Length: 156
Ligand SMILES: CC(C)(COP(=O)(O)OP(=O)(O)OC[C@H]1O[C@@H](n2cnc3c(N)ncnc32)[C@H](O)[C@@H]1OP(=O)(O)O)[C@@H](O)C(=O)NCCC(=O)NCCS
Image 1 (cartoon, rainbow, N blue to C red):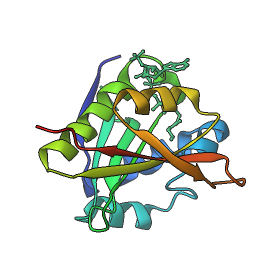
Image 2 (tube, protein in one colour; image 1 turned 45 degrees about the vertical axis):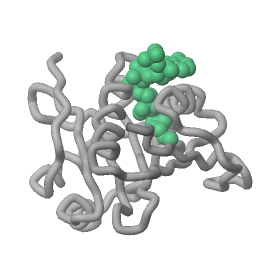
Image 3 (tube, helix red, strand yellow; image 1 turned 60 degrees about the horizontal axis):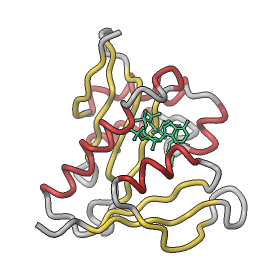
Image 4 (cartoon, rainbow, N blue to C red; image 1 turned 90 degrees about the horizontal axis):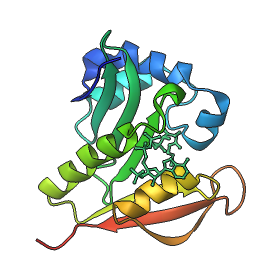
């Protein structure tokens, strides 16, 4: 299967909704930014100027993964990433993350934030490799089940 990473626009709303509806419960548990899925929410998000999004798309232009920076108007912006289970572990998360982090650096964003579940060792290893550092515990579903992390733009 051929995949590519490309920016998403409001024209991708239906495909993005299909992507979020397709995720398994265990993925939604650790990556649930748009649950329950509402196309009105997604089109407003994608059309908005306070976020940037990229999709991992297959040859049929179906979305297999979504990476975004949101709250660009409320620094520090928040990073998020999630892939369909069938494309996990093939390097696509790293490539997608690079697209978003490179964009942040090119646009001189001093800080990017994220939260990650303590149990999500794959995501934590990925984030650490991009320079994110843990600042404190964070509560998502249960008290202190997650970590709050930030990445500072590297010096030029
Ligand atoms: C987390 C996620 C985005 C990573 O993407 P991926 O394509 O599966 O990961 P990659 O193949 O690009 O691997 C990236 C890194 O993850 C880590 N990793 C990969 N597989 C791992 C495993 N089985 N155990 C621990 N770490 C692992 C490694 O650090 C790897 O780095 P490498 O490139 O040096 O090998 C993806 O698995 C996913 O969408 N998971 C479900 C949703 C989710 O957890 N989102 C993040 C919420 S905070």
